[in-house]
Length: 458
Ligand SMILES: Cc1ncc(COP(=O)(O)O)c(C=O)c1O
Image (cartoon, rainbow, N blue to C red; front, side, top):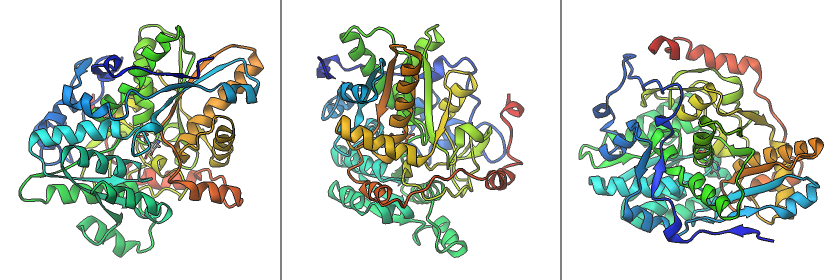
């Protein structure tokens, strides 16, 4: 019985996979405020040019620099597990595998892109990185990466998570990062929101505005902004997850995967695991690929695919994506990293092209699944990850009903050891399911009604 499959450092993939090269419908371009496509130079105040080049690249395979590989070796390759105990508990004929991204020092998949982003910035001459964080995983990951390459890091953490997860701030500080709650009094965008809504729980859209504002207002130009999800180069760096997984499955002679699952906030851990399998799907493989979101923040399942800004203050270009509207203030569910109004353009494009079929789940089912997982496999997963666990359990039960020996693979994007207050509330019966009411959805859609449709740009 082999429970874990390992790779040696020298077996780790040497290139990232870029889905943009293979997406059947090419991605529409990002647009500036004038509605015209932005060119790479326009992104230069925010990102270093070496990452902008990756952002717009159409190359299928992109080399991972040797120095980045050396840094990734601190925790990669990550193990692939077979969830025998969960299978037995469910009595399913399905085989359930999960890729364990919780083994990184900050506890999630986020360092897979934090480390290369910090490294490329360092090469470019950047001195300081600013960013937002929802649940605190990304802020921790960037602080960790800043420590490895020698960069200052400033994190704007969504207020509600800042209050719910105080230990995340201490982790960031331990790695040398600075963490403030958002909205904050330190930026124009933050002050404006605080004036209008002093008690707001905050949102990723607000925190992004604050972080970008700080970066672009540094007159030295040595402060840049780093985004933990959504953008093409972030999806690219995360593909190390799926590429390693394919090698691990090959190693144990598992030649066919039927279902691939990841939770999706901005889309990066889902993309990381699934894009290398989408490559197979584009080339004829029969695989169900499922991104899972909370029913309270139903970006992929209920919101339209159109152009929208990535942040509240409209500092980002407009991106083609599924969007609830940049003004959307999500309900305070515990999966902080899944409370984003938009979705990665590459993931949105993959859904549009029929390569992925999204699913929305309620939080009580997800917590129940997470507790089952903890009591069988032993790992306490992050509230975000619980959405992937719940969908994997649904699929395993379906396989049981159908009597099929399916191979189900999901991404264990992070552990939940810093998120225990959510579990505490679940056990106390204080958590409730919440489907976004139609009126709320329409209200935020009204605010973006005038933004361009994807069709109008082609
Ligand atoms: C553990 C974990 N999983 C998933 C996510 C969602 O982000 P993404 O969709 O970019 O993977 C987050 C975001 O904070 C996270 O911390």
